[in-house]
Image 1: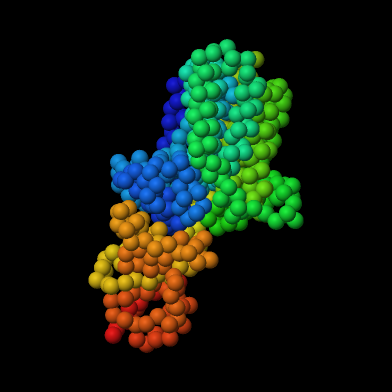
Image 2: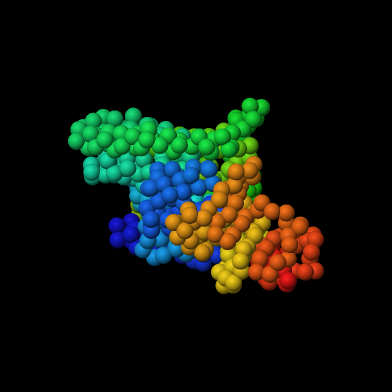
Length: 524
């Protein structure tokens, strides 16, 4: 395959990945969840005041909901917000862009590792249409950034070994950014990097100048860890640690079950659509064909790298969750895509024949048929997934994406003539939606904020700011004063003690037309 044709096909795959990640990005999934909103508002405050929502100047770790969010996705989003402004689309755009770049990065990595242009193209195509990867590229997820920087780092590392030595130090910048992007990377990235360094130590020591830069870059990241040890994720560990009675090995095994990988996926409604596995069923067949092909070709380094990468990827989830977590196990995407790509290219190249013109033409025909068959099979699965993801999922799981909070804020913004607004905290962290959609200036927020010091602070960090209060009042006994708004759920509305003295200012409905929130105001 000529370089020209390779890059034309890659360009088409990239265009496809752009469409699948950016089309209707602001409303599929149906709304931004509280973590996306929190990252978006902190990106907004960084872009405009150089500080997080607590006033901390350019932090390494973002306190947020006392969960110590990682910095990479927030700073990347801050750049986009600074240039294009704060909006739902722009907040998710940084992750979607990283998703597209991952499609390019895995092509480069596959080409370097496998020395096979067709396999490299298959790897980029499979990642472009992967249900696992699309899902996490279309939301502002930390793990998506961690995966990209690991893949990009490995691609740069192997190119640097082969010809462009200046990419070796850059690859360690990427490795460091992967480490600083998400908790799972703190296990997966160091082990993978240690393996590639040990197996290529001789080549690394051949260029002392670049090796010195690698050491300097590594020490910079170590220095940042020493400066802010919270980046190691102790807060999150305390939130997710398992009982001593739970078997980590049993948790680990669940990541390799057919149900999780190819049938239902993660059962968490925000992490998966739950009706299709994390990978397509055809990936299972192509995966084993690819593994067998690499064994026959005796590509021991590639096999070892891919298997180590695959086998350590579930560890972060296994030690912190009883059920398989697609969020924490995201690094499995890389090795599965690479082996599936090897499998697909091996099937196509199986029919290559140069013995005679007649056999050559017949072999070409079989290659074409096998290629079309692979594309049809995976295309059918991808079509089914995309249809469900774009039409059913946004409606069915709207509540899990905190649908309705944006509409409450918009009503308060369009009708500012009230004295005070009380908001039910049932959706958790309601304050952040008001900060985000009202684009409240950081100094204004810090001057009026009152933090929740009760036991509910883990899911309701802020009690009030300005004329907004979040929880902390007797909802059933809400008094019907004029110019005081209450945003409450249907169950609380029907239970209001003075319901006859309230007017429904706005009824917010979910996409399936069931009631989500009532905004009510007293008429006396």
